[in-house]
Length: 440
Image 1 (cartoon, rainbow, N blue to C red):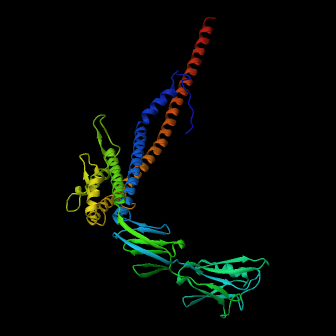
Image 2 (image 1 turned 90 degrees about the horizontal axis):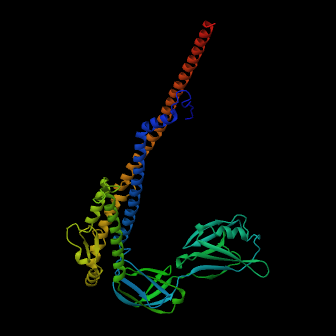
């Protein structure tokens, strides 16, 4: 708030400095609030960072609990033309897979050619698309070849229409199904059922086909999902006519890596929670979130997740807690247990009652975007920051008014002293005049 003052013109006092010093005393409460706001923002940032880490832990733990990050087996193909993916439920074994055919699109190559502006739809401007015994009318607009192509390429038709420009400048129409497999077969005719563009050469769609153990299997795509328990195959055109050896064998490495990655992430979060809530005896300082119950309980809850509900130990699977509260992972013990009984290890680590599920449950309860304990703590700190900010802004107004008041008071003082000095000088002048008159 702009103001003006006369600084010591009469009194000789440095009123500007006096006012500034008085304002520092007046602003002591606001200064304390500003310090509290800075501390609150720092704590909020630490809390938000921790919450993000816990959310990442929940995602990783859920993937392992669901089995998507767990694969104690691996599937291999003897030829790159057949790729494999493996999931939960796979069992070890060897198979020979003969690839008989790959899935193809249905195609119609129309006989008659035309210019793009020629009318090719007659009678009317609609054509009939028939697929699996069901007929649908397609409006082509002006009935020209260009209009027909545009209408056929609408997404809901499941077709891909294209024209080929020939030597004579006219165009041939080729229409292909967007999906593969026998179910994608279709016909296109005029609305009265007569041939469109003189009829077409048809390339029938077909399903992919493979033979395993003397049995032929079909797929509308080139992927055979769960053709064996937990194993899917994808064939390519170069695989046709080949017999591929498929093997599903033990793969401790991927399972070990998945558990190790979860333990590392878990320990990072536990360490961060401990650091934020610990007390440093050396410099007698507390962590930024030492008074936050949500953070304090998070660390202990994550440590407790290593114990099954029956309070048994996971030590034989290589998982223990050390004296510092961190989770240790013995890869050698884990691999030994996995080789001896994969199902037992999988039950202990994955599934609804496994180690990963317990970690996910604790992490989600803390980081859930709606009612997570850390989320609630963040909401509370944001509210506190808002209140502190409002209080500081209110103090800005209050202090500005106080400064204006002080400046007016000291200006009034200087003005009053100036008037008194002027009166004193006048009186002195009058007295001097009287003295001069008397002496004459």
